[in-house]
Length: 463
Ligand code: NAD
Ligand code: UDX
Image 1 (cartoon, rainbow, N blue to C red):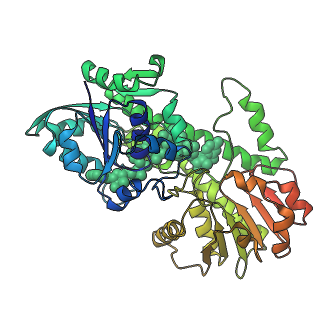
Image 2 (tube, rainbow, N blue to C red):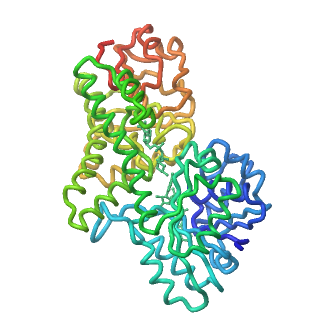
């Protein structure tokens, strides 16, 4: 019976998922470890408002389990030595250099973690892939463990399907838990943990490769729906149709359903782009060029969705942004998270900066440092780095971004932007003043009543 768990990787998945597991399984002793000392210190700083991950409901769960049966530590080796089961929740970004750069997954972190498990584990150890991995990564792990001196290993795949912003409810009530593996007794051990809070019909068992591929496929299908609706939003704008009416009509078909049909500035987040690229790389690797091209188009549509918004804003503002101030509402890739990875705001802000704009950026949760880092990284990696002369400032008070702004661009669907008091904010702006709503997330009728010109994604009607 499994009693002691080590989770390697204290990020957006490792932290919340182990907190919920510790909460639902008081008999387990769980240690979450990471090489990043600052991150571990922040996890151990509960109650002082500086957790590394912003997630609604997370603090409440942590307050029940931290120090009881959940610990955060930098002692990776020590935690592996004590564990019956090791969860690998490390990052698997897209490779930046060498063969497969820009598409293949960078397995450096998973390999390093596995080698450390091979060196430190004692006795019989079940290793569980929690990171999203290319299909057949379990083969790589088996080969690393085959040379381990002190233990016997079984590798299982248990990909995580939670989304940021709703992680706690997703983890507490998952649509399904997927367990992949070839060893029935190890699968039984892992299933007996989830069975403490997940009903049996929601636990799916498959072979290793189906489990690894199902995770990539789920993200590819979700991303595909967003690219599909964003393509239709552009058609709506040209034809007089309204994307909200179109999605209401098509989502009512029970075969399609209403989820993941909201138009926006394109999908962001650490997963969709990376996992699509991973699938494309896999298809290319097996010579399945039409399959690779099919999924490539989902990524291309997303890039285009972001570029077209930036270009449209420049066009509406008379073709130049020099000496103009643009208020940016939202920098996180979606509401209810502090995560900026692959946020559409990064690409769109970079384009506006290149046109010479001054950006006043507000986000309720993203730190100034995170905005600076995201924009600096993007500009450094861009072939046109330094071309623009724009500048940006992060404002914590939302009123401040409206001061002398020529335009407001809503990029993240934070609920508070739906409640803006336009009668108070609009007078702070210059005229003519614009509001560009890329999420259908604010009251444009109220903004228009205050004399502002408005644009909403997917709306063919001239406001
Ligand atoms: P993250 O970058 O937030 O966290 C990963 C952590 O692993 C980092 O803190 C890093 O320091 C640590 N780490 C890396 N190598 C290590 C090592 N050898 N030893 C100890 N610590 C090490 O990443 P994340 O968002 O939590 O994602 C983790 C995995 O889960 C990825 O494969 C991702 O695709 C997948 N996933 C993410 C989400 C999500 O919403 N973020 C959802 C489902 C699945
Ligand atoms: C995603 C998957 O949903 C989750 O199952 C997986 O485990 C990790 O990747 P996440 O990236 O955290 O989760 O958020 P998600 O809610 O999927 O949103 C991703 C992006 O799509 C965001 O930028 C969001 O704003 C955008 N989106 C989502 C839309 O533009 N329209 C929609 O209808 C839904």
